[in-house]
Length: 313
Image 1 (tube, rainbow, N blue to C red):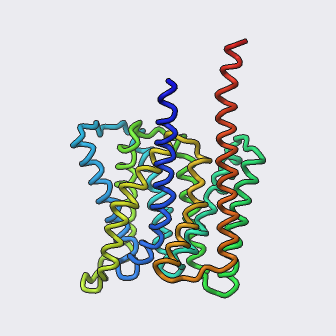
Image 2 (image 1 turned 60 degrees about the vertical axis):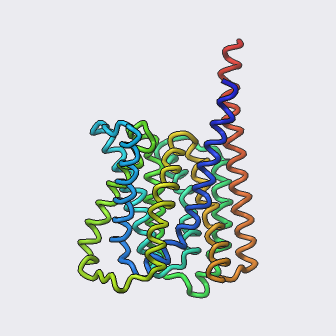
Image 3 (image 1 turned 120 degrees about the vertical axis):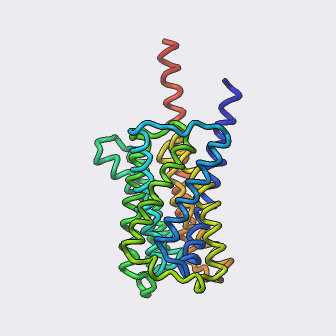
């Protein structure tokens, strides 16, 4: 048993590292994709293709894709909330809101998860809530200057606010709903359900009628491919696996790290300036993440020690 624990910890942190870095880069990829691609149409195709590719790979590995109606319903609900509602609104918002700012606003997700837990009657430690608030202070340091100089579109910001609520609700409900035990099977159904919903909404918005492949830039097409392979197949699969194998509070720390990644990529790739407020805000966010992770680790150690102490008595 002793040898399994390091492997488990390595798996958790490897998956978390993928979510930290890859999802931080997807904000930039989305911003490039929506420059010439229909927003919801390309997002719907992205998730349908990713879901089908993942299902095909699982079938090739002879993984049983059969699930109960209850499990399929749970996976579909989570997928629609996080991908159709959460990611779909982010895609729409990034037509007018810079990718870095979008990532910063989305960083409020952990706070909404904590609030959902409080509404559900769960006990939430003050230290955990304080850590989340500290992270939001860092986000405010980054976002407020942009709001004051008028670079943040209010409609886009409202969409991002709705995206955070939707994604947080999906994250909160994920461990509480019956979903397929195999994390990758669950991921496949989540992406397929979300992709279908996004395509239906895209058709309703008339996006298909305005599709002109001649206007698609190579940069947007490459970004679209990156989102399918890395954003969906790799990172979202890692995220779904984490929701089944790690605490929600630990998993949600990605929302604090993603903005830092997005800001750095913006500076390196798009030559966006790094101001003192960005440096300070990023530092506060990193401290908040470290604090939350430390508290979660301490709580897990306490939970493991308590049963052992009772058994010894």
